[in-house]
Image (cartoon, rainbow, N blue to C red; front, side, top):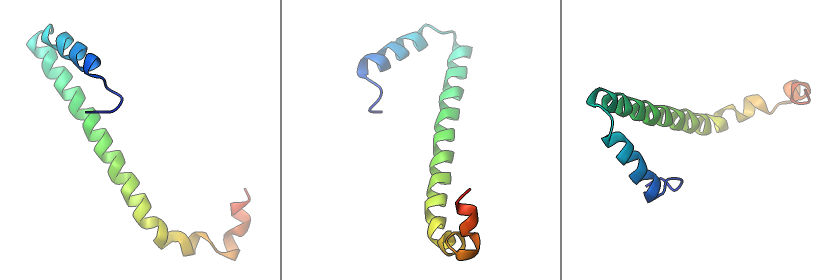
Length: 71
């Protein structure tokens, strides 16, 4: 369970969903899927940035570019 979500909030959301017509339940499911995909995409982007940081360190930390670091 998400640490930000509480059982009461989850129960309230489930209850709201139960009162929706089926076509809107499908929309809710699509929306939840898109949120999850966005989270996965961001996690992959963050991981790729962390992995490449060491490779770029020599490029970023050099005397020629030191003046740009001050901007």
